[in-house]
Image 1 (cartoon, rainbow, N blue to C red):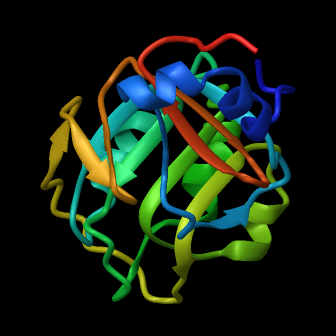
Image 2: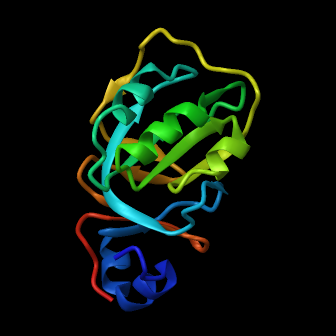
Image 3: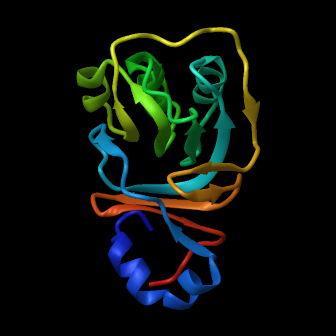
Length: 166
């Protein structure tokens, strides 16, 4: 469903918006990577200024999934860089949404994967391995759970409990 515009999904599913089954993230993310339109089932991870768990996920086969990273909105360092994004592309991830910063932007922009993040930052993250996997996270005003569906395009990002129709 990656070719369907988020605006069309919203227009066709007002009942799902009213019930909360379809939610739009606040428009706070910058677009990185060559794939501006992406979608897939969500996998969540929560970290703070640490990227070990993110790297662990992206080393796995993605199978078209989207990694949603709650980085606490930190603007003090990057928790995602070019090497893990390259690995995510090679392992079949559809996209990565980061409530935090990225670095190696030119490298990320060369990858055929969708990446959304708050900003770019040159400083690297800690490597302590702290955080939680597969838990509900709240980013950009929206609660997101493992197994929900994410749709992203240049208009924004939608989260749905199920695959919405158009």
